[in-house]
Length: 373
Image 1: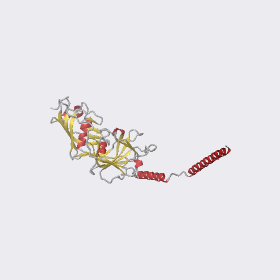
Image 2: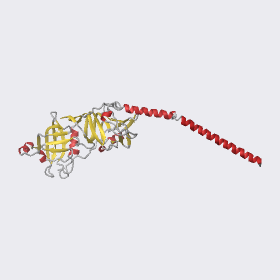
Image 3: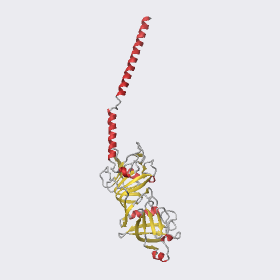
Image 4: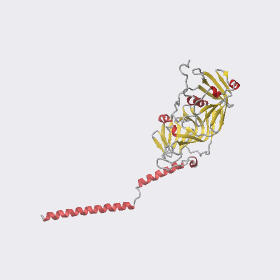
């Protein structure tokens, strides 16, 4: 019996000793780890790689980015803090919607969120303001025609419809269409006259010849001291008749996004309406991701596209077929779905856009059923 008790005590003693040794070993390991708190080599290499990618992204920003797109908020992983997103367009047709758009030679702009706590949401043009900085564009006759038909004069009770705009190289703009002063009685009309720029954003059309139903009307109006605005009304935010002049406000004459423009010079010819934009800034042009002549580039700032937030954006849009890019704010998503995406190791994105299938922002004004006879 005593021998069994002695054996049991021995076993317990051995177990206690083993537990003590294990505890001491664990304490020693923890002490060693607390002294050497450097990350494992794999983790360290990955962190170095991420830091290098951040340096690449910063180096891709134009050197004057802080002047035209400053940091205005505290930064974090979801917000670079920049005022907006830099937009750079070269040799592309950039549409707002439908045929309303610009044939762009080279244009820099800033997209500024209407809510500074949010990114630029590309799928919601009303979420940002379009502010051209520097460059030249042409609004071709087809775009001017679409602007009048699909946006400025297409509302209930309109007195104008089926408009067509053209121009001559001597600076005369020619507008034809139908007008009604008496409800239900549509008559053909035409106007011819020059255009001028006022206050850097007002497009003023000054018809010198007006015909309604083929009869010269301008001389008759002058003879009886009646202005064109008393004969025909335009009721929309971006356009109005002032006396004998039609005035388009370029800050309100297009569908969203809202615009803040300053036009330095303007002229019109057979190619369309030529606009030269200017501002206090003429940004250095960022190096494109893909070496191509025609593209749209989003550079710096934060954007939301589809369901993805892209911070410190470097995104280039090009034509999938390699030709001239033709894209639209209201249809770019369909073009991306029909094309494909590419990327670089530093997180830059290239969207190869499928050919654009244009869709009207608003349907053009059409004759009512009882008028179409």
